[in-house]
Length: 394
Image 1 (cartoon, rainbow, N blue to C red):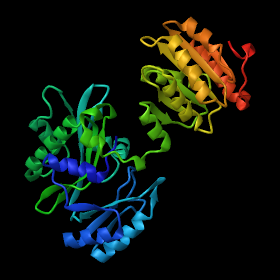
Image 2 (image 1 turned 60 degrees about the vertical axis):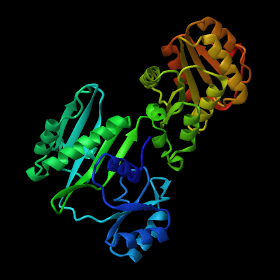
Image 3 (image 1 turned 135 degrees about the horizontal axis):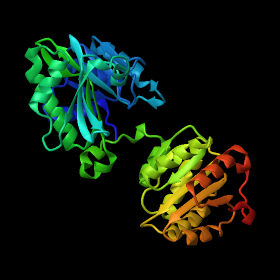
Image 4 (image 1 turned 135 degrees about the vertical axis):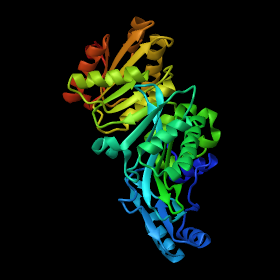
């Protein structure tokens, strides 16, 4: 779950990270009142969960309350990358002397949290990594020890930070690490971490992503979710506990298990097809969940065939098959469906699927066979009508 900038910075403040004075406004009048209260030039910033706000005109400087009102009115009428701007953050403007980057994320290869810093703040860290990787300094954090002060100083020295700022940089880095750990984040970054007159450091922008699987431990963070920023399919998937990501292919995928889902997508591509989505239906395959997953898949007009790949371990294949039949009664697939069941009671499951009516249903015993079948069906135009019969099943 992504937090808005203003939410991320509020979280930072709990851990002693200095942030600018500011408040959120949902109307131009509110923006003017906040600017008047701050009594200084302000920065009006669109609050949407996309990057590139500045380049799109979503971040602008206002020198007077009247100007802040005008700019807020303009920004609140914008749509950035398909998302309407519903609120703006009005922050006290800062005199920036230098822009740094400081962030924490998970290095999955090392199975450790990695802290990163760069003297090239204010731009996407991915772009810095691509064009000037030598500007990124990294330290690997041992989970039993956490981020140590000497590691924070290593980062400060590595980016050439003036020694007078090392102490404050260290405190900010340690606070950011506590924020990351205690809130089960997968990413916490300050970009830019600005050097301002004093000299001092100030977190001018922030980004935090929370692990959805840990939200049950953080009801206060779960309450921050902005459903206006989600697509209808994302909301539907979350409602049923389904992991769903839409892609640009034409073969819908319904699989139980993230690893098996990735393997299914890979083998579809191996045989010349293009997956239309990643969908992990998770444990169990109740009729309601299968029907919800089918609705998500079929909401994509590009889908020409559906491949269902289920491994029956704890969940028996015959139970999965009954759930599918019930789901097909709720949601009639308009395209052919290939089902591969393997595991406990797989033969019984395939026999049950033979009872499907009004669905162009094909069964397969191996993933290779299922993928080849789905690729063929997606490409030969057989998905225009729903038919059933022994000749349609293999």
